[in-house]
Every structure is written in C-alpha cells, then in structure tokens.
Image (cartoon, rainbow, N blue to C red; front, top):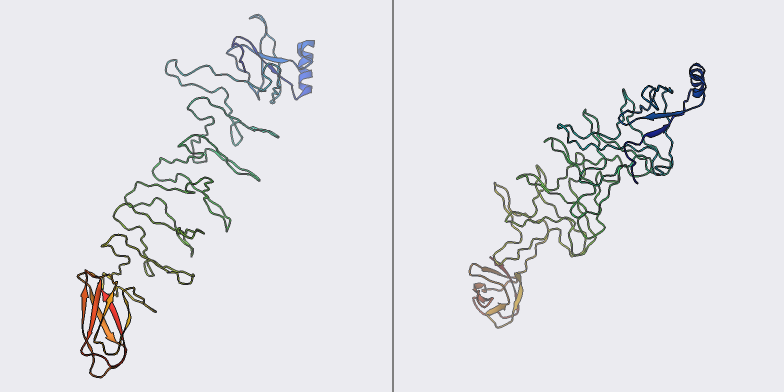
Length: 376
C-alpha cells in the first residue's frame, strides 16, 4: 500500500447525525450548507473526531465552516481499499531530543474506552511492526492491568512464534516481589498451569539460580500432594530426582511423619529400591542421628547372602561357593536340628575364592540342615 504525499489533502466524509441542526445552519449560511458536505484539513491541521469540525478550503481569506454533532463517520474509499482510516507519523524523534509520537491517539476522560475495535468476522484491532519493537504495547500507569483479554468460548490469549529459543508467551516481573507468570482456575480437575509438549521435550521446565530455591516448587494448602508425578512407562519413574553433583537425588522430609514412603501394588515388586553402581557404594543406608532406631523391619526380611545347606551323614564339614565376600566379611551359621554332642566348630571364609567352609565338632550320623548368614 502506497501512502500519498503529505502535501495531498486528506479527505474525510462527514455525515451529521443531527439533521435539524444541519438544516438550521444551512438556512443561516446559505444554500451550500443544506446537504452534508466534506471536512477538509490542510497539512498540519487536525481533524477532530467526536467534536465540532471546521475547515477552510481555497484561498487564505476563504472561510467556510461545516459543523457536525459529536459523531463523525469515516467511510472507506478507493484510495486505500484495505483501510477506512490511514494515519501516518513520519517523525522519528530526532529533533531537539523529542521522542517519536503516535500516529493515532485515543483518549477517554472518565471511565470510557480510548480506542475500541470491533469486527464481526475479522480482527478487532491489529498491530503490525517490522522492527524489533512490539507490534502492540499496553501500559497502565496505575495499579490496574496493562492488558485484559476475555473470551466467551475460546482462549483468553493465544500467542505463537516460530523463532528458535524464543517463547510464545513471556511473563516478566522485575519489581523484585512479584510473579513472572500466574495461572489460575476454579476447575476441580484442571491444573492452574498446563504445559504440553507435542514434540519430545519436557512439558514444563523450571530453572532457578537461587542457592536454596527450587527449579520447580509445588505447595498444597489442603490435603493434596505438593508435587505429583505420573507415568505409564514400564522402565521410567513417575518422579525423577537427578543430581549431577555429590548431593542426594531425592530428599523426603516430614515434620512428624515419614520422610519417604514407597508403595507398590505389583506382585513381587518393591515399594522402595536403592541401587549403588559403585563398588564401594551403599544401596540403602539407614541412619538414626539421635537415639532412635536406624532400621526397623516389620514383616519378612530376605538377604541374598544367606541361606541353608545340608551336611550329609558321615560328614563334619561343608563348603559353600559363589558368595561375594570381602576381608571384612564374617559368616554366621547355626544348626537347624538338634544333634547330641554336635555343634558348629568354626566358619572359615575365603574372600579371594568367594567361599566359606562350615566345620562341625564331629561328623553327623544323619543329614543335618545348617543356616548361614554373611555380614559385611
């Protein structure tokens, strides 16, 4: 669209709404004012929409005034078929330090609206910028919202971008005490903030540089969970705590209850599993820094380095192989049947061979069961 030269006069069509007033003015001024005329403004002279308008056309001593009521109608013409009104501001803010102005300013005194855009099928207000400045700027110098969007059946605000490393919606608060983004809903089964990634990335990602702050923090003021994670995967966890340093991956802390609770409903599955991949690591450590109990087991306990064996009749010893031992390991063994005059004489471990030998005080006359347990 080509904007005509500024020396060209802008023509606005004026249709008075108060026909009796126009007729009265026509009778007073002459026949030329009986029909609705045109308001013309020379360059540098404003056309005031919503107030009485006047314009002088012709020589300097020409004076023809047309008055209207407080509604001025502007109709689309053939010069700009895409726009009803074209306003141009060529001043770039380079004269005497004066900032660049606005092409259009809407001002309402009181509780009215400065600019109102309405469209039956299209866009009510459309802003386009070709530089690095925003297409639309909303600013409130008081305590109200700078921008308020309301939709009856659709989304309140829809924003989109195809730029790399840019956000479709950016919320920023640099006041030092507010929130960057707040999501709120009164729906019982819907979240206040929903993150949806249709690619392969995270739905929601939180980042914090605070030494004691959290990248993502969840809080519940009622009886629900502060943070909940869920997945249907057979190899992934519902919640993952990953620490790339030397600290814990997950910390569970409770003022009066259980710090970490693991529950499993699967047959043979574990409610809580600890795995140490280092040779000197510890899968699960139970510790009581006070006078309490470090480990309390309610139910059956099963250990991989324990079991039972049979010493056949006539034998006084038996060797168990394939057991992981260290120099600090010791083996406990007890007879599982009474044999008069027979007892465990010794259990001799061999850490290098990964075996141990149970010796009796004398040979048994019948097969005898012995239970064993390795510590350390």
